Amino acid sequence: MNAKSNWLFNLYIFIFLLYMLLPLAVMGGAALNDSAFPSVYPWAGLTGRWFIELFQDKRMWEAFRNTILVAIAVVIISVPIGTAAAILINSLAGKTRTVLYALMVAPILTPGAVIGISTLLFWNEFGVSAGLHLSALGQASYISAFVMLMVLARLQSFDRGLEEAALDLGANYSQVVRRILLPHLYPALGAGAAIAFFQSIENFNTTLFTRGTYDTLTVYVFSKVRSGITPTINALALILIVVTLVIMLYVEFARRRKEKALAARAGTKEQVAKAEAAGRDQPQAAFPPTQ
Amino acid sequence: MSELFRRYGHTLTWTFVALTAFWLLLLVILPQLYLLEESFRLYLPLADIGGPKDVYTLANYRSAFEQPTEWKFWLPFAWKPVILPFEAPIRIQVFVHTLVYSTVTTVITLILCYPVAFYLAKVANPRNVPLLFVGLLVPMWVSEILRAFAWFIILAFKGPLNMALVNMGIIDTPIRWITGFNSVTFGLIYVYLLFMLLPIYNAIQSLDTNQIEAAKDLGASSWRTHWRVIIPHSKPGIASGCVMVFMLAAGSILVPTLLASTQSRWFTEIIQQAMFESQDWNTGSAYAFMLLVTCTVFVIGMMRVFRVKLSDIAR
Image (cartoon, each protein chain N blue to C red):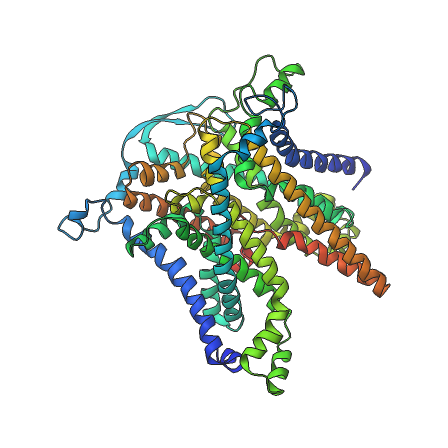
């Protein structure tokens, strides 16, 4: 690549980053602007009143509580299911594996609205009416697939010989799982639980059809935006942006510290490169789509 | 399977099987089959259920082909519709618009993301990549609805974009961005962009940089290296990104609702209308099933075109 095209390329990346971040800046900035329509331009002066209004909204707090409840339920359902399914499919081969794998990942490729409607109809047949419990079940149907994929990836690096050795040395079955298998899977289980939690919070489409009369945060924001918008939503957005940014930067710096400690201990360049490569793998792994 | 019994014993193995069966049967397969079955039945008052009127019929699907009206077709990024010389059922018009604009979104996100994915995977200094990712992933973690809401503000008639353009003297009068499918397309591209970027980044990252060097050493131009080496290698990522973006766009409720103009109706709105306004769950499930089939056909089509397996797309 010559210098000119390189320069253009860098410019493109710069514009792309701006394109990703400016909308958030506009949305967040509008939370601090003293204007009834959420906008940053023209600037009408700094205010904190949208935050006060947001915190006084009882409906928001209830939606917040519901969201957290559903998210916890989804973690409780999907982590064991995803783990069990990964262990099961990892021991299969051939046609059975292909078919089962297709069934397991199908929910990821299914529109959330379809999952929501089918969950609603199916459970309604058994007298279970819409509500947060159905939202949790509907969300778990595709979130389990994310957990399954993460655990399955982790199982690839599992040394089965360890289980053999434990069995040979007289460990019983539950000891093999508790002392050998699970400790190896912990990172994937932790990441899977985090993904499940945040995926659930994000979810809108499946929740919309299964929620009955309950609000979750996304539904609350949606109905607020539709019924005459006020900058209180921007206040909520700004809080979420700041929290996200803080968590992500914390994770990134924790990773760097770990990397440095590792380098100091090993003292070789190879190890640093390895740790860096491992770090690079993180963002994508922590990153499934929404339904 | 016998392997599992030997390692974990009967109790644990059957627990694994039971959990998986609960998931696949009660949360995935049976609800979908039930959706399909319901879509062939009529929406009847309780008294008639199980009676002579309760028969299997195609009526729900047929209803999608009713009410022919003049077709105002919106070309991508047009400010005025083209009036087609024939009539078409209103829901089919919406369906076709949904397909067209989901495809447009998919193609544009692919074009926008490929260079960025390449940059992150092979050009950027690996030390800076994690920080770049923080920048890129913040919008992603700040939920779909807020990403769409951000564009709702930006594109508003008296919003920041118009105000800035007018004050800078680029345009004289504010532009009505929320016209036709323009605002919806802008929104869909922004909201689902990263679902294209990440799979392609993953794919390019797994390519040995030596292969790129080798192509260059053998005299291939930059374009040719991309066309013959990098793109073929990143096919699974491209297929995965396209499938994800298309499915998310076609099934999107938030973006087409928040950024809707008076003319841009989306197929999910038709589904919602049946489910919530008419309370006709049978017709709703018929339309939902149409959406599901569309997405499935797209997935299979992509697998054929790119010659990749399902395990390459979803992993």
